Amino acid sequence: MKFRKRFMTGLAAALLFAAAVPFHTLAAPADIGAGTGQDIVVVIDPGHGGSNIGGQIPGVDEKNATLVTALAMKEELEKYEGITVYLTRYGDQELSLAERPRLAKAVDADFFFSIHYNKAVPNRLYGAEVWIPSLGENYAKGYACGDLILNELCDTYGLYRRGIKTKLNDKGTDYYGVIKNATALGIPSMIIEHCHIDNEVDMPFFNSPEKLVLLGRLDATGVAKYFGLKSEALGVDYSAVPKTMVAPPTSPVSQDLTPPETAAILSASRADGKITATLQGSDAQSSILYYDYSLDGGLTWSILQKWESAGATHTVTIPADGPSLTVRIYNQYDLASQSGTVML
Image (cartoon, rainbow, N blue to C red; front, side, top):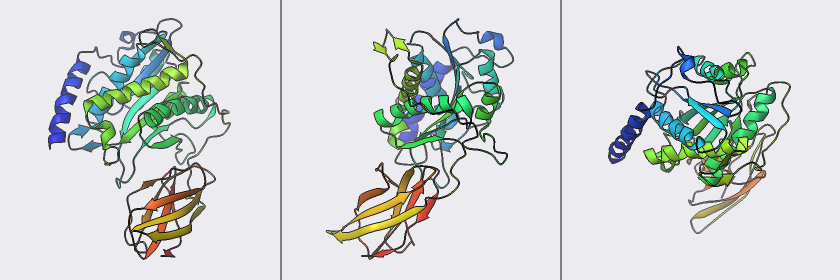
């Protein structure tokens, strides 16, 4: 209850600031402006709005959190030279998935960023991820920019890195509406899912309006690095920041639809009330992201644990004791394979 009251008080102040900014609607694109010549033009889309609330937990509505983060991202980006920034909404307005990219097209945007917070069923997942177009130059641009944004959210701030992802529908085209519509209009795009508001692991990263603002500033830094911007006000020059370049795919890059090929316990021993185990997990299509464990043959399972290894093996210490050990190993798309059970 204390968290909810404190959060809502701060959020109300942040949204009062948002209300003071002029609101531009799709019906009046001329009011948005047309950029400033050679400036990079970025459109930031605070996800949800109006009756489309998005994810909810006590004290937090996603539509409000995304607006606070988007406003902070805009304010931070405007500290750089050579960039013009717009939002798709500046208040509690509802826009369709087609209207949002059309606003970006109206100002000849160079990139469209849709801001979101995640919520999963069941609520076991945690960490930050970005979703990008599946094909061509838009995939390559999304991958390079998404990598830099995740560097800020994860390497700098400490969120767990869930990765850069694509998702196709049953027709083999992009699943997410804003990405599909932006691609149709020739605009590079991405969805930024900052963290999971329903998971205690992520709670410390968003549990105040100040942290929602900080997340927007981190987004902005990633974008500034992608475009190689300079800021006299901030005293930074990102013109030489390296990017992760990938070849534009000529066919859509699909999400991983199969669980890891390997999930095994290579060794396990217990001593002093702890279990030390070496696990093996591999997946040809995506990275390994989590594991969980059971000490009772699979009747109950731990919370998801981070797979903090760049390779296929990971040595872990489990602060518990039991007669057996079983693990499940999860890939980047949250699909799991289960090991055999090792008696201890």
